[in-house]
Image 1 (cartoon, rainbow, N blue to C red):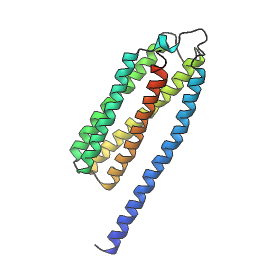
Image 2 (image 1 turned 45 degrees about the vertical axis):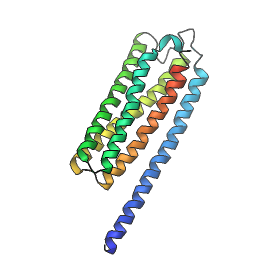
Image 3 (image 1 turned 90 degrees about the horizontal axis):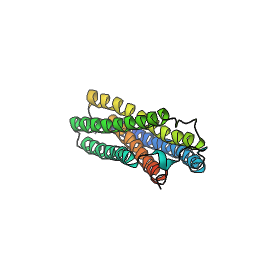
Image 4 (image 1 turned 180 degrees about the horizontal axis):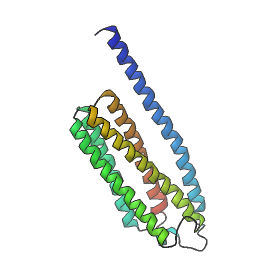
Length: 198
C-alpha cells in the first residue's frame, strides 16, 4: 500500500469521525429543543380554557398503532445497516424502502389525527393545552418528514453508487437521527398520550 493511499484512508476516517460527531452535536441541540417543548406541554397541559382535556381527545389504540409503526421502522432500519456491512446494496434498499413506508404511514396517521382534531373544533388556537400539544407533536412529525426526505435521497445515492464509504457514513448518520426520533416519540407517547389518558 503506497503512502498516498494510506493518507487518503486516514483522511476518510477523520472525515467520517467529524461527520458523526457533527450529527451528535445536532442531536444534542435537538434535545434542548424537545426538552423546551416537553416543559411547555407539562406546564400547560391542564390549561384547557374550559375545553376537553387529553383524556377526552386522544384515542390510545390509534396512538399504539402509530407507536408500532415508528418502532418497527427502527428495526427495519437496523436491518438495512446490517445489510450495508455485508455490502448488499439491494438488501439495503429493500430495508430502507420498508422503513420509509412505515415512517410515511406514521406521518399519515399523525396528519389524520391533526385534521380530525382541527375539524372537531380542537385546533391549536383553542387552548394553551392544545397549542402546546400541536407544537410538540407537530415538531416531532416535521422531524420524521425531514428524515423521510433524507432517506429518499440516500436511497437514490445507494441505487446509483452502491454501498461506499460515503453512503455507509450517511446511513450511519441517518440511523442516529432516526433512533433519536424513536426515543422522542416514546417520551411523547408516555407523557402526552399515556399520562393524558389517566
